[in-house]
Image (cartoon, rainbow, N blue to C red; front, side):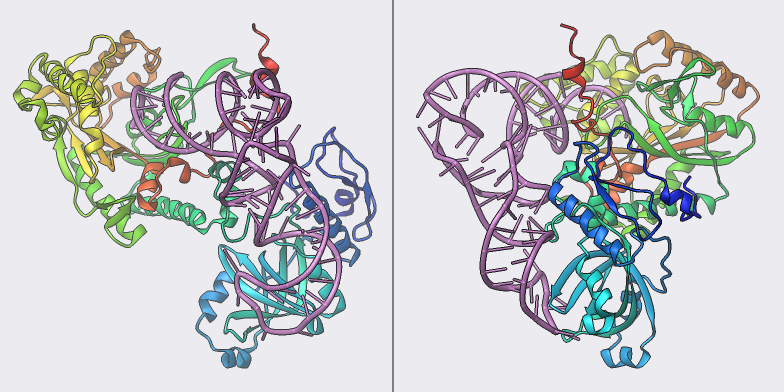
Length: 565
RNA sequence: AGGGGCGUAGCUCAGUGGUAGAGCAGCGGCCUUUUAAGCCGAAGGUCGUGGGUUCGAUCCCCACCGCCCCUACCA
């Protein structure tokens, strides 16, 4: 951490270590504060673009310093934010402002600048809101106006003055004194188109946030969604916990993990693919209602719906089952939609999602429901439940799909009945679930952590919630029979494959042996939920810094390393 | 991984097989209530990178790099 009492001579007067590469032309020297000069020595050829402006602004910074200003001052005390002023005085008339004439001190980033001769206007932006300032030479004086001249778009300043309205009736600050706060050595994106290059928006999110209101709103909304979720669960007696991100065994989901290494212990660890097994240990420990909002990491593809690290809310509730959760979810999604967007009807792209009700379908019903008419008579529930029934139905579906050019179900290796059912559902029904839908009764074969249905052990008490064709939640009555759990884990391990655990999580079985209450648990994908509630078509629009390939220019991978041939 | 698209000034975008264009930003000048401020002037580019075709390539061809979209894997 940086010392908050920074400002003592030692810190400032020490020449900066060149360290072999600096982007600055001028290196500061060990002169005392306020009288320091720059030395123009090229330290390294590395520079940020645009170079002319970078250099120009460095020169201006020196000139500002020459005016007696600290180039990086430690303190500015403000009385109001731009947002607060707009909020409070947005409707107040000029004469009323004149009558009050309260002294205010406001800070912000300069986002527009109109300078004319001996006066000028600018807009200060703070927390996404802007207020205009008016700077007049007569008022701020020779030096103050000189400082004003040296300001660029992007600089941070503070002002002292009072509110008034201009000829065009815009609420503005009549500036009596200017305070330089920080220099933008690089220019902001273009002022009315903003930043549209998506790559730049993701790589340099800070510019996106400065330039694009829409973007800052999305992330503010994301924060509110998480707040709402915490409120919802806190009000129901849950406690929030944090469980390990580094796991000795990657469990709790079927996914390829990231591998890392701890030096002192000399062990490989996996970045967690799910917090599930740890949270359930906590229900064993007597935390009857727990939740965690945190990251999961899966070493898999990147798409508009997938980022290698993503945020999940997971929660567990003792003495409940999946029916209780389904009911709770209907409430939760409706409340969220209402509180976040103002309505339970939410616009998403070209469609409107209605969160006031959720249709419920069993997986087998969904297959029937979305079975294409041209593919013949849909399979009966009895057929789908019978041995090899799902496989037979899939063959019939594939026959049609291949003829019509639709995606067909391609099985890798031999599948069990439950796997066929899951595959068929994913192939033909999943992307049709546009309106919020609770899909329930998943095959046991693809639900290794769920309790079976007492009347049909081939199915489990598990559901998923689909919205706009995306899976956003996954919950079930948790399997708490240690013998059955061990059997299913061993079956997974025997099955093999990159996505399956390699090792039995013995401690988890031991925990279950100490007794886990009947519990229902669920995970909700926060990123996807945020997409839905902010009308964002890509997951990268709701993740501040989505994973991208590292920028070229540093050590480039292929060219420098490619001597294998 | 496969298919499609994109890459031109710091930003937003035009454009052409024959010396590269605008607006904004930046620079110099004028301007004391402007607001996409205005007016005058000057500057700014390895047209993603590397090959090839050509008398000549930013443009055509190939490869590579990066990003976006779709499909596959996945939540």
